[in-house]
Every structure is written in C-alpha cells, then in structure tokens.
Image (cartoon, rainbow, N blue to C red):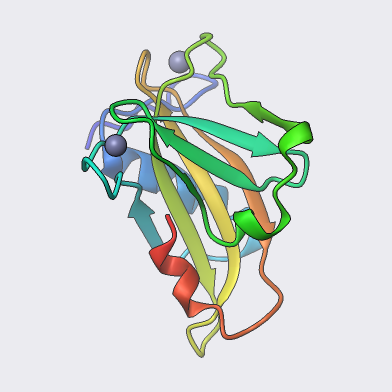
Length: 144
Ligand SMILES: [Zn+2]
Ligand SMILES: [Zn+2]
C-alpha cells in the first residue's frame, strides 16, 4: 500500500489503495462494507475502459479481450444514448476498477460505488454511485 494523500487528488499503486479511497468516499454517506476488484471473467484481465450513463449505470470493457460487463444492476436501466467513457483528469481512460458495497444489517446491498485507479498516473476516484432500494440484492456482489 502506498497511498499518497498529499495532493488534491489521491494517488495509489494497487487495489488496496483504491479500496481505501472507495471506503473513504462513503458513497451515500454509508460505511462501505466490502470492496471487490473487477476481473474479466474471460481472460482475468484487470484493465478496463469504463462507461457511465447519466444515471450512473456503469459498464466496464476489458482492454485485453474486449468483453464488456455491467456492474451491479446497471444493465437494467442502461441508456446507450446517454453514456460516456470515464476519463481521468490526466486524460487517461484505462483503469483498474474496484466496486464498493454498503450493506444493510441483513446483508442486502444499500449503496454501490465504483472506484477507478488510472493506469497512467495512479489517480484514484469514485466515478459513479447509486442507491439500491430493493431486496433481495445480495447477489449484486457478484456483479463487479
Ligand atoms: Zn478480458
Ligand atoms: Zn490519470
């Protein structure tokens, strides 16, 4: 872990650093219980382009094999005409992805946040977050 909080933007080198940034962000104001790194199911790749629509629905596209996957329940409300790919302040658009889950006491998901670590300069940020207001929703932890 080599989290650099000295500047305006946090920077980091690995998943632990990104997870720390996601926890600190506390999307929705809730404690983040679990942070899971995205890995491509097809090739085990961990570098992605990330698309977000106006409602914060999120899709990641593996840079190695091109496979795309929606995060959480994003596929259900995806708006292809209102999506854009995430870009770091440095202009980079290749990221490692970590998905944070805040959960209710019964384990159902309350809030999802998507943290990205720029692979060019290590800048960390939460680029999307949204509320989950239904249950059961524990299965969303498998969609990262
Ligand atoms: Zn892949
Ligand atoms: Zn960057």
